[in-house]
Length: 369
Image 1 (tube, one colour):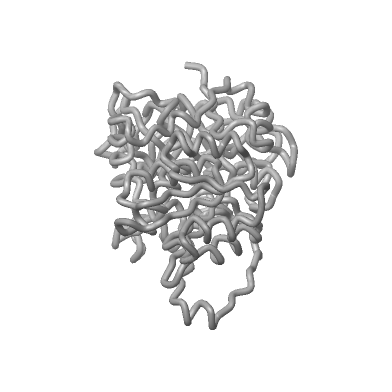
Image 2 (tube, rainbow, N blue to C red; image 1 turned 60 degrees about the horizontal axis):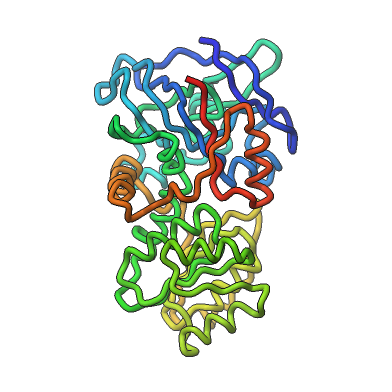
């Protein structure tokens, strides 16, 4: 089937809309017409090749749309179902069997570094040169996406798919870091470093927990103002001085019980760890370039009982977690739609530029029907 996709030919190149072919669904796969797709930091990271997904490629991993074709063995989806698309998993390894699908032993080749199905076969092709797809199991910068049925989450017909697209990555990552990983205790302090799409969702989620303080840290005064509207009790701008000193002052010199680092900057991660009190937990979301390392003061780690935890996708199981986030959004308690700015699909390069230059928090491209 011929579809239109935004192809990234080489590092730092613009996205180019062109006609490509998507293969027929296998027995366990779905073909989805994409209605909306978010632009995420990881898409930009691949474009710069800080994340080395093979090029040329079709990216996109925050898709939402309507099922148009169903594989012969798929029984829980039907043509016409509205779905949010998330990452892929094998479904059979020990982690998948235990429900920890985000830590599937094949997660990296299935989602980030492969560019094909796990068996090496392509989902997208073109007549000119080779093309890599299956990005996060979907490659949804296209009018249609082919994916494993395991990657899809059904949503109600009355919901706006343009609002739900970011659930696939940024929303479940930010919310999951709070709900699934940090799990803050009543009366505690949680600090969110970085007020981008993931960080602001973490602020919203933290505001739904019984913490005493939700502190947002960012260099953008406008984003800190939005963080306050979304539930932050305090904000800290590093442009005004050392953020660690400011955080210690806000916590009476004790430090925070929880820090969530979303920026992917090693210097900020060091600040997040330094802002913790005894027995504090730092949850690391932001992804620096591959091979990045930080020095760790091991005696301090041991003596103060600090925990440094990495998380992928907020430790989420999308089939279980995304419906819960949808319900919180429906109730108005997780208003992540306030982060969205919509773009026409053929304005994808404007969306990418606005995201890279922090003019838009969460770009969402709307596909033609």
